[in-house]
Length: 446
Image (cartoon, rainbow, N blue to C red; front, side):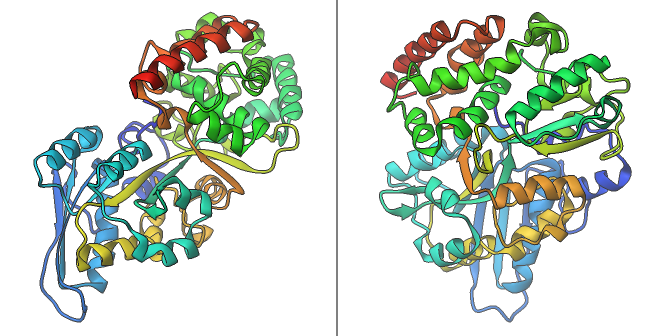
């Protein structure tokens, strides 16, 4: 739930044809209705030969773009045949069944780091230490640490998502005479000015609880720091910790400003994520900002032009915090260690491979050596560069926790934060709810 799949969402966005072409363009792609694509064999010139099978989450336009990346690999390694099977949201189940049956693919791309760790703990994966040098040259340590277990690297985060962005209605900001804020106090001041100009500041998709966990995580990372963030993620400190309550109070600066939320608290609880985006993108808007990730434009179903009608700024600094990104990502892992598999992993670790998809749109690379110039528009450049060059990066906390607590509709974090939206003054009560639910989920191991 918390990772809104761009590959699906981009089908619904109403943007200028140039952006659509960048996000969904053909060329080197396969039929998006097909479940698998492959690069053919033949040719000469490469020292590596063999076959590689990949099972992964990328479907539709994402599948076409990944095929373009594979075509780039094929140009360098003509004697390697790569076959990609798109399994979408069913990927965890497909892989688990394949591993249990003793016939996993050579490589796989998944959206959950916890799944990588699970397979590594079961000794189902092969380490990627052969690519550590390439990865270290191109990725910040935070990205590498995320898939390092027991001293070995087991995953390459090839595709990222920046969830530390705020999208705004340009006309509302212009009419109110406000500029994108850089700090939390500036955000709150701008919100008051926006309200006074006649437009509520915030659109909140409270019907989808994960939007609220994202808001909390962005505040908590900036306010409590990485050590506390990691401890809370692993439930090594309780949700009743003072750092959590402080972040909840800060989060309440927005949730408690009920008159400045489109529809008020009750309306926000009935607003799903796509509607929260449309509230900001439509003309006239129902709200001026929506605090969510770089995938926001991909879910809009109203006509809006980038930069003219909507734009983006980074999640504000809290208490002087340095630039930080809460994000998601798709990780490539290896089940079978072969020369062909190693060659493809090495290739995917390079800026050359990431640049192929970046040029096509709908993609943010964690690879810090991908040139900003390759991204097809200014907004993508803003969000992608912030992701790759973040001084602090942490993966979405709820995605790293047991699903019963961090990823299930109607229970755990989703429900508890919805309760907080109903009553943002109940900091102690909500903290206690979160701790009780976390204890149950972690005791069961998910």
